[in-house]
Length: 352
Image (cartoon, rainbow, N blue to C red):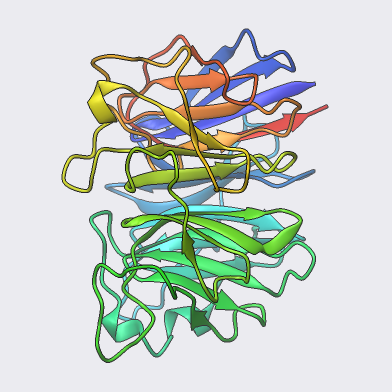
């Protein structure tokens, strides 16, 4: 059994490998040295995909069968020249039921039905009637989260900052905002239901209608696919944060609150990951092995990951280039022995 940790940074990607005990790790890289690596996805039984971005060559999707040899996808996501939109980077890559999705900045969603060889724009979302009122968050106008119902893959959810969550019941042909109960940050009087700045989404693998979201203005939960949301912050020291991850086996949730929108720093200089084992009803601080003083680096929205072992491994990459790993579901943590560039995304997967 091998655990692989794929870490995308502002100056390349790095690969950590370990056995199932996850006590000793070997580092490889950098891949795509000097390029931003903004998204990562491992297709079960298939290839690994990276979203890369270069100041000279622009954004691209790279693919590999072995993490050693890579090739760029020639027919990757791109907007038509007359669309008026610019594709600046790939924010997220998701693979499910033979389909691949790429969420991008400037906000849009692309789909591949041929294993990542070619990509087509999901026009129902990009041309949504509310599009004229879409407004970027501090990180840009980015489609950064995609959820797919494993039992009914035509059901999709997409999170866009600073617009909100959208749902499609028909494989992306039509979409509707689903943000009731979540306070907006940039509300538009002519387009109801948008203006909430969602930061991250996580769904129950066995019940796609059970979704959690870390928003600019709080932590929320829905049990009805997003038709209504409730605030769930009991035990959290702050309502503001970026990442959110779920253990598919136990349904434990993991988050990393920051002090506030104005002060995007760990609270009191202590890096803590928070865990909920009751669906968000309550949260507990995890800090054994994490820095408890003079720590001022945060964890970005795509930089918190969970593996599929029992107990699960949890991995957090910081903006200071540190990677912290837990092999016991978050009870204790170890800092992996390297300092990387600013970490943008983390993907963990297990292979026999």
